[in-house]
Image (cartoon, rainbow, N blue to C red):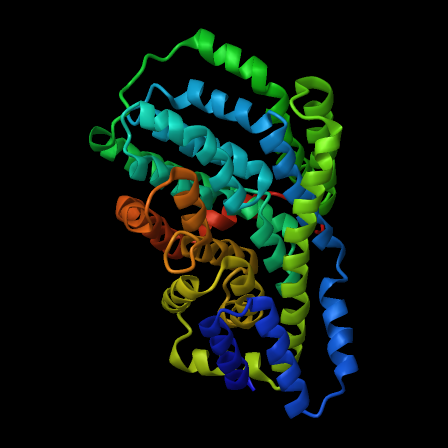
Length: 426
């Protein structure tokens, strides 16, 4: 049954069929071959999307829309400029820090690429960066947005593997900051070639930027602080973040009108619908594979090869890197997580740790051809060719792989903070 599913999925990718439809076709074929009533397919697909934590996805997507259009993102970028603009690599450091701020609220790498890129790339070009280098920095830093909480991929992982989303969010804080630090160090090293000189640090500029952005900084405090403090779950944090972002955008900053919310809701509904369709069909596939004992068989076969966690994680990481080359993050997460999570947890690997690791690896896939979504968005925003952008990103690929090896070699980088923190539910 596994080979049937993989064959149909491969054909779907080759002919350009949307992954969601490919999963639906695979589920239909498997149902017919197994002589299972189609009504069970409908029942399983409904079960896959009938989950309270899934409500966090549209709310966080809408928060990102409000941030981009309501003045929140711009103020956070100005604060980032005041904080790190004096460092060598200047605006490059600002772009990465801004992505850490923005990613800590929107949870989407694509939204991060579009929002920070449109604000930073023109200024970086004026300061001496080539178009390719400016676009490379803004594109590669977007991967931070799916690690630092909130994170839409981590929500999906939590749903399909029944892992606490709150624990997943807390697990992503330290590795997200580590990724940002690695990219900043790389930018510092390359600064002489990429342009962007050092400017003087000024406390008055920092204070002015902080006063202008402090209301926006409350957003990550609501999300992360609320979860750590046990005030609310990750799903409830999404609602609180949306209400707060709407309040300050409409009543304080006043940079968009209430009528513009209609367009934001439409874009949010489209993206949410795509995610829900993927999840519905992926749930059916997972059910078929489970009743045919595929996950259990895979666990036994892998354990026969090795039960050493480090070696197993290296093998799984290599597999996920290959998957990321040919499949977008969202479908890869909902398809692969139910199959791989039992394998790694069977040798004692923490489920939340693996979720963060998996999101990071598949996030690298967003930056690599031929299907890297963020790569295409970056090309459009920066008006550069794919070839020149990939070439400019090569040092950053190396930095991301170094971080990946560190996370595999030292799992405590991910697990120590959630182990210290008592969080409740999803």
